[in-house]
Length: 429
Ligand code: SDX
Image (tube, rainbow, N blue to C red; front, side):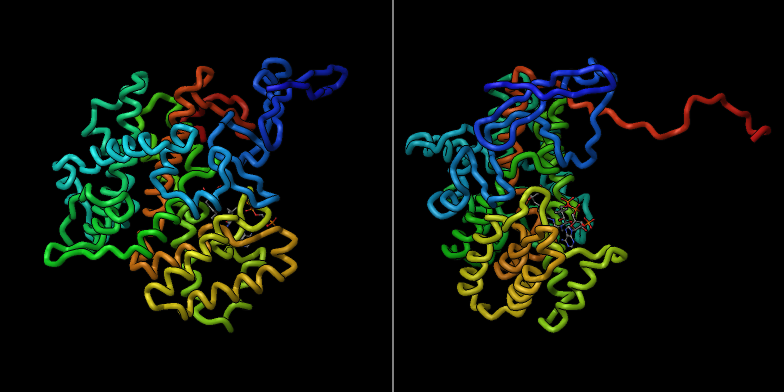
């Protein structure tokens, strides 16, 4: 990686800061020695201009609306590939050969079941618990069942834990769903592909044969590909920070699930659908657009805007197309919510406020309508996001653990509290 330098002048002192150049995208100013040289920290709450690591996994160009997994455009992967192949690509860096793919499939299928005692773990929850609360807890609980793959210094244990997480997250997600609707858990069926298996665990009942719908399976598989990874987003950064302390992979992924739940992040798909339902009809849209622009109103158009994309989120385009395919397949092609979403997008994209702030639909804008049409309750939308993102979280965690230069993440602060002062006894306060 070639290097040049940036110069910083403080009073009459000059400092040379190395610039590191990546393969594509913005270069970085290496400030790791800044505090030692100047006694100053940098300040960047929200990390709007901060690169936290080097990574070779996912590349986003927010201005162009480009998303690459290991160099492959998301549009091609979604169209030509499938989710398990994407998991392999994110983990190993290359598309699998036929034999590598067969071996990967076999290794996933060896781990789709969870320890039978975990089923009892679910009984502790209220039936009306949010499935994300159940998922956070049950992913964390994996570390209580799989002690033989928690030693992160052991390459083999790291890989077993990675396969266990990719294989078990759909099983746990389906169990979380079944528990909330009071239906019995459905065991995985290893004769099925990954996504058909997940749909069957969600929708099969003991009293009748479950029929796979290939259109819905393909649509959900594509949705999983779109959600699989996204550079150093909030939940991935959470996984990396947790992993930097040496915490076991199950605990790190549970931390990622917890962070994803927020409405500003993975919870936006649930929030976006609720917003569309609240808008209800096309003629209510102007009122909500006004609210979204009102500084005194905390309302935001959920599913709009992105920290990185200042152009159309490439995933949202594919999501919109998939939404039409699913609505067609389930016979809801005139879903009023889609009509509201399309009109809201049209009005927002021609509104000066959204144009000036470069606010476009993101991946969450159309996913809610699609998942609802597939029969998922709103509360399951972020769970589905977590099923897909587990592949990216694991790949990013693995890259960090295998980086010889990695160290515990420990940011500093700008202190604005009280200077040193002496204790005052209560009688003198
Ligand atoms: C995901 O990081 C990732 O990669 C995330 C993700 C992934 O795959 O991991 O892509 C998944 O989380 C997608 C984003 C889902 N969230 C939402 O749809 C929630 C609604 N969007 C916003 O909350 C917001 O756009 C964020 C959180 C997504 C981004 O926020 P930023 O980058 O911190 O931008 P900001 O909040 O500073 O907003 C910039 C301006 C502000 O106005 P000013 O203060 O400059 O006057 O734009 C406004 C905001 O008020 N704004 C919006 C808006 N989003 C930003 N105004 C109305 N509606 C919105 N949705």
